[in-house]
Amino acid sequence: MALAMTTLALYGVGGAALATSLVSLRRRFELSQAKHRSLAGHARIARRLAAFMPFYEYDEARFFCSDGAPREIAQRRRAGFERLSTLYKTRFAETIRRTAEAEASISDLQFTDAYRVPFQYSRYVRQHLPAAAMLQSSAGVTVTDLDGNRFYDVTGSYGVNLLGYDFYKGSIERGASRVRELGPVLGPYHPLIVENVEMLKEISGLDEVSFHMSGTEAVMQAVRLARYHTARSHLVRFCGAYHGWWGDVQPGIGNPLPARETYTLRDMSEEALRVIRTRHDIACVLVNPLQALHPNASAPSDSSLLDSGRRAHFDKDAYATWLKALRAACTERNIVLIFDEVFVGFRLAKGGAQEYFGVRADLVTYGKTLGGGLPIGVVCGRRDLMKRFRDDRPADICFARGTFNSHPYVMGAMNEFLRHLQTPEGHAVYQDLDGIWNERARLLNQRLSENALPVEVVNMSSIWTVCYKEPSRYNWMLQYYLRAEGLALSWIGTGRLIFSLDYTAADFAAVADRFVAAAAAMQRDGWWWRSPTLTNKSIKRSVLKEMIARRLLPEHKH
Figure: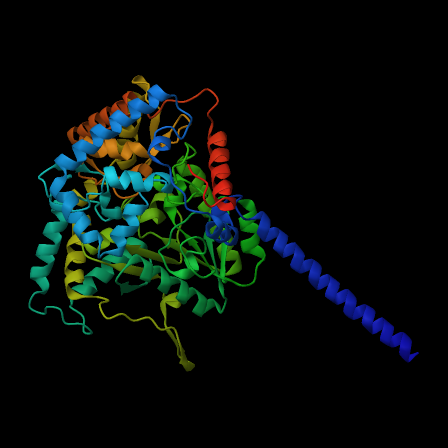
């Protein structure tokens, strides 16, 4: 009898263990199904492959015909490259000299210089088309380098420049004059903070505000608050989305340690919603609305432009529908929905992505332009989520402080920015904003098509990316032709063009003229030649073979 009971007990334990294992396997399967089928969606695999990937580069002969171009095309490319090199070294001489002088001691410059183009071409490009990363002045929609060359600015200062550089110069100057009597006193607040808080509450539709010194810090605080109030560990981010450079939101390449409490899910996916509804450890879901322009893809950069596979498409209604479904899932599971509006806040609408897409978040982070030209990060949130201590457990706190948080000079410049949004001029900025920029994109694409140029632009309001219509290994060269024509791009090249909203029709026409001229020059120089057999797939296959050969045969030459 005792043996039978023991046997039954063992069967029961075994059955329970099996049931638990099956549940665990089902959840792992569901999580796998909710990931995007790309390296960006599989952080661990991406990190391993990055460690495996060998360095190699093309010699001078291979540089001009890595796509199998015939000799006459390679010679045409070489001649065009040499003309560009001569132009750069004469027209931008002082700017290049001072940049090189600084680069030896500034690691950030070393990094951005190395990753302007695919690494196989980088050293040769840097030798002959050196970076010119210094400016002496700005005016209107233009910037001027150390040699006196004036460029139309399409960098947007990483998204800071919403209203034009002249506006931010004035904001900083006027804001500083209003807080000068207090000066850089830290700890106590300048009374302007009260007005800033009230305006931010109105804009965000939320109850409380905390101030930080960068967008990254603001997102860190928002996630920490969500974990504190839900007593859960994990955050959800969507494939390709950028939320700053700290560990938990950058689980893949670029982070030396794995992010163990992060789920990276496929954007705009029913499978992702299923994971959010069934997991019990999710504290918050992070959304960067900029991903609506290129769902499930990382921020486009010319350093990864080995073929013409870059894709972008903005469907406002589809993304709004997705956000509403996400909002419902988070509400159902008591998960904190965080909108990371550090980049798009104030650019899409005065009320940001919440207003633009018609969806309310629990916490919203802002940054960049909100500082009136100075560094800033802000969290706005529901009152119950913003509290950093518990009345009944005084030792259980959620700590977040910073020496320069609420700096008087930042508060002054911010006040100038927020007050401007209340004026008729501030309201006018948003009138038919999408219509204006959609029409500008359409007109430029029409001109590119009429000139048989294999390029097009895709936009989300004033945020643009350049896509390429024919397979090519040399699309990254366009950034250098654009600079030669007088357009200032950021170090990621044609991946992202950001326009300030003070661009007039005449200003944009000048940009369009230069863009078309640059693309036409690049085409004349043979960079967009292609064999009938060249495809994006064949380019990827060729690069993979090169990498394997280099890995297996370290002395293999290219």
